[in-house]
Length: 116
Image (cartoon, rainbow, N blue to C red):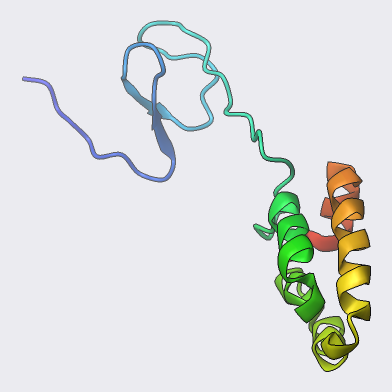
């Protein structure tokens, strides 16, 4: 009789045969198929979990209120944006920042906003 173990955070299923294998395994020991790592199609995700696309969308849609600054951990700038949101200056600056965030390289985003 075969024993079934439960999947933990250190395990994954083989893409080919469905066998439970170590999450770091590059090749399935049962069927020998190389495991592909999933690609993040939506841009960079920093080590602290912050997403470049999410930050850019927040800057574009809610940037006048500084929501993207709060999301990125820049609380002081977020409060400043809130204080001056009635002038529409933060909205203009946030629009420019949304473009800058979208064009920023993943490495630069992780370096600037990826600290835990």
